[in-house]
Structures are given as structure tokens and as C-alpha cells.
Image (tube, rainbow, N blue to C red):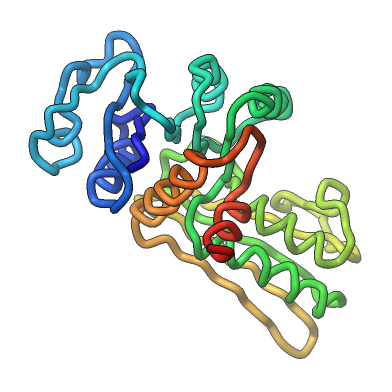
Length: 261
């Protein structure tokens, strides 16, 4: 069994992670945390996620017996929690370069799985996008992503993941060819990759990557129908992290490890 604690367990994603942990073979939920003063502190984690009482309370810090922490919070909190010095699965998005450097430094001592999207489908799609982009090298590329109205970062981490894959398929540097939205007189230039973010309602996550030529359109689409798909991927990553050596890992590493067993 892999004993996990959920950081930010009282939030929407945190509750989804708690429920997934309770329902996943090989995972034991031993703790969950929230910040000082949170009204949910002391609440039973099972009751928080609708699974019924399990006898595990929400606390400010994870219990010592937790082998792996799982964190889908905000960048500043994620970096602060590296001080726990435990293996961690990070689904937090919107990290800046300085924050990523701190995570890289922490990964010298513990295993860290960092992925903007934990869904198995998206991470397999990344390889497909890279291959399609290489073979449709003369086509224009546009990426449109949509998320719920409360998502803070734009474009999404998944959008950037897929845009990087499209650029890599053509030997491009995304930072040099990305165009984020358009306004005014802004004709498309050769080789650019357009990235557009929509925010509204309760959309869990949708990503559309379109390859245009003058004679056809090829569209690759991923729609997340529930946050559970991210939670299930996080449980898979937690099992991986529990036995991995120190280092920075991606969901690709997690999937490849599973395929090799």
C-alpha cells in the first residue's frame, strides 16, 4: 500500500483526490491538510469528500506516516510545501521559472512528479501531437483551450504542454513562434502557433489543436468530463513516486514505468 496525504484536501480538487485515494487499490489515505484558520480543520476526510466517516482528520500538516504527498494548489503554496521533504506529486499549474527552479532543487533529494495534466489520455496525446505536427509540417497550427470561469492561469498548463509538443515535432522553439490571442492588424506569419484561452461556466477542461491547410483541417481534441480523470492519474503517479529515486519526473515517466512492468 502507498500511504498518501492530500495537500489542500478541502478544495474541489482536494476532495476529488481524497475520494480517488479511498477508491484506488494499493492506495491508503492517511491524511489531508489545509492552511491555518481553515474552517474545515478537524473535519473527517471521508465526510468531506462524501464517502462517509473514515477516522482521518484534516490537519495543518501531513502526518509522518504519509509516504507521498499529492498537491493541486497554487504555486506559492506548492513551493512552501517542499519543506516537508517528502516524495510529492504536483499537479499545480501556473508555476513561474523561479518556482520551477526551486522544485528542481528539491528533486535532488526526493522524487517529484510534476505534470500540468495528470490524465493518461492527455499524456498519450502529447506523443500523437508531436508526430502529427511533424508529418503536417506545412500546416498552420492553432490551439484553443477552455476551462471553468475560476481558473486563474492562462493559457492552461495542458495547452502549453500540447503546444510544445507541436513545436517540437517541427524542430521549433515554442517561445519564438507562439502567438497568444490576436487583435488589431495581426496577419498570421509563417510557422507561428496560435494559442487561445476561453474561460466560463463550469468547463472541466477542453483542448482543441487544429492543423489547417488550404485543402483540409485536421483536429485533435481532448475533453475532460470530470476532475476524477486527473485524480486517477495522480494516484498512479503516487504509486510510482513511492518507489522512485530522487529526481524530477513527468507523467510520461509514470506511464513508461507502468508499460515496462
